[in-house]
Image 1 (cartoon, rainbow, N blue to C red):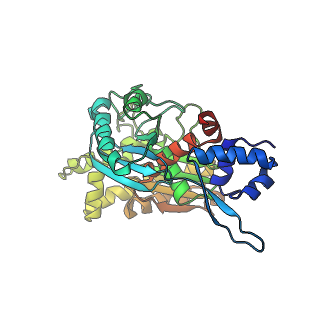
Image 2 (tube, rainbow, N blue to C red):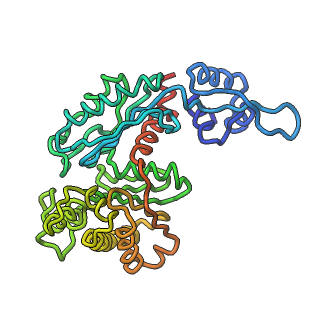
Image 3 (tube, rainbow, N blue to C red):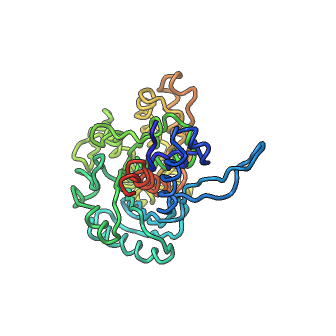
Length: 376
């Protein structure tokens, strides 16, 4: 079957064929055609050739490798109260990093302006061309769009063109996705690449879920998949959500709701990260609320687990600490079908998954077979 230059690169990148002989066997191309297409990839800096694979006899074959250091990716993760940005190589290795308090409610001009300043300050440390920009946002994003759509906690961001704001400044394409989606993608690529179905629950000031099924992020028909923060809990009709409804899971068990409850108890707290600081310090009221919130999230996740049947469920975000996750596990394993949980791993996520996912999103888009063939 004919293989384009971009398809040859994919065979090398995924490890299916990493020598000229293996590529000839996999593709059926003539040696002349294969050499011409590899020369284009080598000349563009996409491949390197050197070293040798183990040989059982005869002349050892030279290894072909994707050159993951020939360009960089600019990525940023925007949260409700803070943001971080990084410059990485194409394998996700961080070459420079910035982070700081940044309120998403201050609007896209302010937030993206600060992130652009961070990018510009970091670029000299990288010293390589930018192949793309990846942005993680705490709101819904329609597939293929570079803006958020009717975000409940991002005033002023609805339909704001993030791509046209950042892209020309750095002469690079801009890709945008919901933070839970990118956290799930980052977890899958870095820690659970063999998982057929993975769910990441981001529990911070708000609550959302990202799903990776069959190796790809599942976004639904228009980007609304995983929006569990707006599943309504029938026993909380007075909990008013930022979306305008009442009884939403985020309005009951999200970090913003817990912060408000703690403040009402005389413990001033402003966000999910503030709740986390109090639980880490062992504040009894914060611990109790975290456990209760975990149980409420577990009720919703029991249904999600029965529907999706994931092999891995990662709880991430500001509230992802042992007391909250213990509450999730308590209810999840009691409410979900044993058939759905018998092979389920429930884990606490690390930091930086959205950054890792944003890198993967950009690299997989910009170095897909079709994208490479178009450039060449």
